[in-house]
Image (spheres, helix red, strand yellow):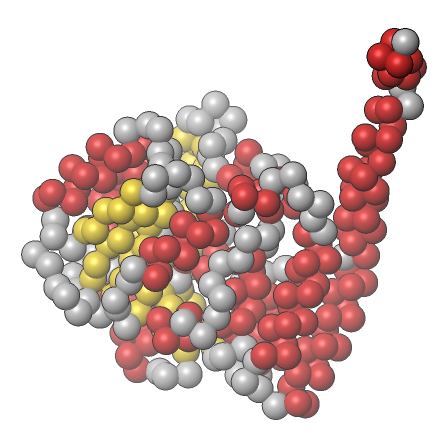
Length: 319
């Protein structure tokens, strides 16, 4: 079964996701809402990901499988599945997460009924694995958000200053608003920046049921990168590896640009800029660490040259 004009597009970017990929795809194909397409973009995986995806694509005409010739990085791969999509509504899916069968149907119902809602998502259940990768338990995510509030500056504060979860990026999103953004950028925390831009367009709505299952495991990028902003930058955009980057300063810049370009009143923009003052206070240590990290990177070659062993080698070369 296939449809050239599906109402919903689900994009699944993947790299070496064989361990949980079947479970993720099965949960999507089990949706009670059936008018969707599933776009899988394989970022040149070296495990059995390709075999698994081709097997599913051969069985279900709603699946489109694409494979990149080389690893283009997480950001471009996430963006690619959206660029290939055709639906009115769009959802990103991870290769290690799951959805309850009713998730898409209930999100579509909300978006169809209320045009002020830009993103619809459900409550989240964590699937927790230990350091060895063995399943431990399911745990309710107890965090709450205020992205449903009517004023854009309130939603901005919630995402930027209240440190709300960015799991809403896996909600069902109106594609026409996504098209008005640069999508996922090649820098750390660009998913949060995208959520901020969407929140300045309109409200988010949470379904008060646990219909989304987010897996926490040792091979997950959040786990392996250990919240290292520099490493995260190169995970999003490997072509930038070796560059001197200022992740937190870049984040400050992107938040300010999001405010400037938002279709809101000047009064609302000023309130958002005021919240950026709060953000600067909250993140001043990290901003300073960004500068220290870069100074260390710049001075490291000089330090190496001043080592006695390096100086001796240089003298030997001269003689």
